[in-house]
Length: 71
Image (cartoon, rainbow, N blue to C red):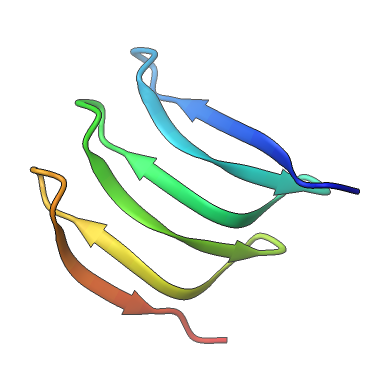
């Protein structure tokens, strides 16, 4: 099965997350957003698990923290 584009939204309709799924699980690069549209977090999934480096962004959308996922 090929990965499919996926988006989810906050209750107010603003974009909450964007990425892709495969077999119903997150895969590849994902972006998560605050209700005001600024980026909150970015990183990669493999079979629904966070892998590699994930970046967290401040309220202005600037990177302020990088976390390396175990596994």
